[in-house]
Length: 384
Length: 79
Ligand SMILES: Cc1cc2nc3c(=O)[nH]c(=O)nc-3n(C[C@H](O)[C@H](O)[C@H](O)COP(=O)(O)OP(=O)(O)OC[C@H]3O[C@@H](n4cnc5c(N)ncnc54)[C@H](O)[C@@H]3O)c2cc1C
Image 1 (cartoon, rainbow over the protein chains, first blue to last red):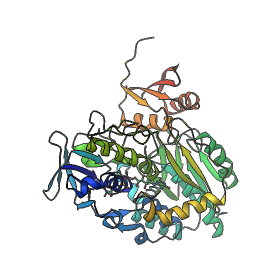
Image 2 (cartoon, protein in one colour; image 1 turned 60 degrees about the horizontal axis):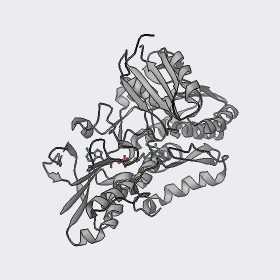
Image 3 (tube, each protein chain N blue to C red; image 1 turned 120 degrees about the vertical axis):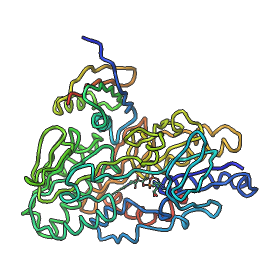
Image 4 (cartoon, rainbow over the protein chains, first blue to last red; image 1 turned 30 degrees about the vertical axis):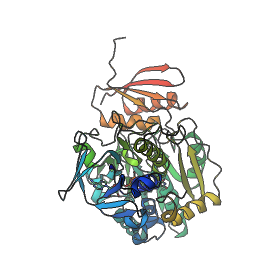
């Protein structure tokens, strides 16, 4: 029996398991193959919704569903914490002592946030990278009556590169509606020399920042917080005072991949950009936030990577070559980008084609809302 | 020029989001003083943006080369 083991029941793990299950339907039915997903919580969390806990009154409960309900019946789910991946013995060990052997392994354990890596983060700063963090930010915004808001980025890479800019636009619009805008300064700290990494998006966003009266600070990579003086300091040696500080926390890959010796200290798995194999291993793949690819850490990235991994696994199990097109990842990513005031745009790109975002309009804002609402029925199940 | 040994290569070809400069900043953060990092980029803006950031952040631009279809920018981490 061929054992296909998927570590992590997030966007990437769930989709890849369902797609492999479909390709190997006959093998599974005949007892010649088995697909298992291992996840710590057994719950699937829709993380893009965190931003709307902070900004749109989204209840945290609507962002969680049982992982079992998203997996096809032919996929098995094992709930437990993975403690060790042993690439030599081809076995994964769980905290409860279970050992799971694999012939083909997919590592989709995502990224962790480490606010504690920046001293005073917990007491001085806010973020929207967890349901709890986003709810706390909501409370801080509710209590806010005016002053200096600073939005910055405290580590690279982080999930969803447009998110801090989106939150800035949404906060600005909210404060205007609440009549607090005149008594508020908003500062946006970009890690690079312009508002956003993609030049065309930056050209679009910069006048909007100016129009909305948001002060842009370039080359400001947040490094430290001084709680006494209430200033945030950059890697480049500058500082900015704040009353409300909102930071993207530092991120790392899952602890288990570091401790198992599969990834260096930052935790990102060395991944082949086309085959998505973990380098040096034709039986291990990485997808989603877990990889070291120079791409957005986005659900969308995992979404477009999953079919490639599924095709390559099915090909190995069935003893054939992977399909030339389906079996090669081209770096495709597609993300909605909120501009505020009910408008948005779309970033679509791959390794060879930079994005050319359309002029912001209502369609792409609505696109994001509809996508968020229908996510459960589409992405994890492989329906789009 | 004394020969410098590149300690890490950041292959950011095909990176438009988050982009080569962001990949370099990540490597600088993860690295140690004295590391020499070589960034490969297909993003046209890199050969302007990266040297600007290096200057502001207090590192050293070691080399900027036109390669076949991409740029190579070599940086030494000074602090
Ligand atoms: C605020 C915010 C906004 C975002 N907005 C967008 C957006 O607009 N568009 C977009 O495309 N993406 C967005 N994202 C990013 C998106 O949510 C992630 O990129 C995506 O979830 C990555 O999928 P993944 O499968 O790699 O990891 P995840 O979905 O994080 O799943 C990883 C899974 O692995 C499990 N796991 C980890 N370690 C272990 C272990 N040791 N044992 C057992 N299980 C383990 C976890 O429990 C989890 O279920 C956003 C993220 C945030 C936080």
